[in-house]
Image 1: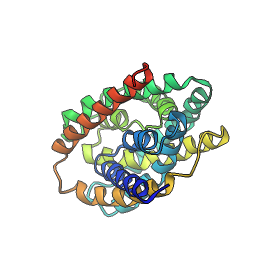
Image 2: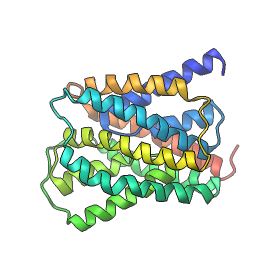
Image 3: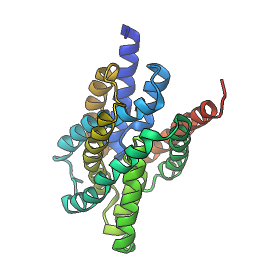
Image 4: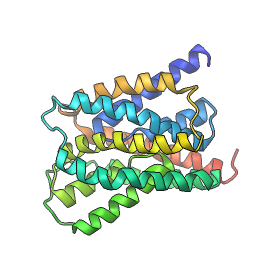
Amino acid sequence: MDLWQFIILGLLGLFGGALAGLVGIGGAAIFVPALVYVAGWDIKEAVGASLVITVFTALSGTVRGIRSEDAVDWRVFGFLSAVIAPSTLAGVAVSSFSPNVVVQLVFAAFLLVLAYPMALGRSEAGMGRRVHPVIVIVAGVGIGILAGLVGIGGAALTIPLMMLGFGLRFKVAVATSLAMNFLTGVAGTAGYLAAGLVELGSLPPLILGATAGAWIGVALRDRTPERSIRRAFAIVISLTAIRILFDALGGS
């Protein structure tokens, strides 16, 4: 790895980590394309590596968030983590034998789905309990499988689930989602390491940047309007999804 590649990966890690701290995402929407298009990694290796980075990002952001006004709801964290983290291993198992193009298509589709709620940018208070607990559990299993398959913690789904199922306010749901990404990342990383799908060569600059970025993102979360940032990010991930779809379908 040359110096410029190290710097670029570090900056991408910083950007992804800051978004993780600010809006509760795992950062894979930044980390996976960075490893594929900057470091030249295979999509499956990049997905596995993104889960490794997510462990450090989520831990950094959660530790910083302990002092936040909108801290983690540990009750909701415990319940959903018990459902989502084990389900991540099922997604890893599917990824280990699925063709690269399937992983690319699923990842791109998830990015496009993620773009809409990110662009919507609503931050209203908790909506009260409206979703039946059984639906919450089933949705949690689905989010865990998706996380293992495409390396994304599923914050675009877990945050609305926490607001509708548990009545959490938006920023508390963001903080709780970030903490949950830690367990999801650990479970997914273990599965990918066991399957031999994680290479560590290009990870140090991404991990360093993401760890610092998550700390910064959480520090900014309480005093920065997230709506414009979420909309800009929606544009970025939509363009990334189009690029991945183009490659998956045989574009050059």
